[in-house]
Length: 299
Image (cartoon, rainbow, N blue to C red; front, side, top):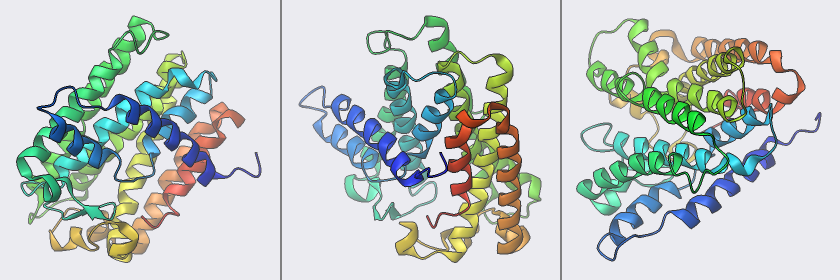
């Protein structure tokens, strides 16, 4: 795999997830067509589909029946999209751009954006607990996967991070506060994604823990590098307003350590994560390549 092409690899899994979501996410009533339109607008607004790729890559360490994974990978991407819609709302970060396009509330209005996010959140659990869709998933595995997703994205994870982020604006903070925000708002879901691949691949408890730790480390690095890109990237490159964290007085690593030291912290986290995932040897190569990409991207 010395000629591993990460761009093509990510594109392959992105297309697989996009096709599945496109077939599944349809209006269920003539009265809710506009809601579905708002949901689809954000789901298909672009993006690297990094989280599904991590799920597939972790699963691939153990098994190769990838069609089994697609509904779960799609569900996680749908849930991630909900978090972005709500994150952009005027009551949250009040962003006008997401992935180079107007944010959901700018196109559909704030009320519809809230409802679209709500619908996507619940849609994820609808998909993951549908036995007709997931005929090859044992009930115990389905329960573990959905429970751990709820933990990673609720008040013990992503929502807690978002709350702490809001409360931190214009406040005097310690670096521990910022780390808590990043670990929960971003790293918790990414750690879940790599662990989910292990869950679906019948990994043992040690293997799932290694995968979760790997994901949490690269997730923290991902958010720290986002802090860097907010200061060094352009609006065109980022697909959102550059320097918005600075303007909104957000809690960031760069506000404590500056750009260069923050970069080095992110790189050290990636190196630690890669060292940990070497436990799985060659089958973990896709995860290694994704991890390295996190600190080389420009958006």
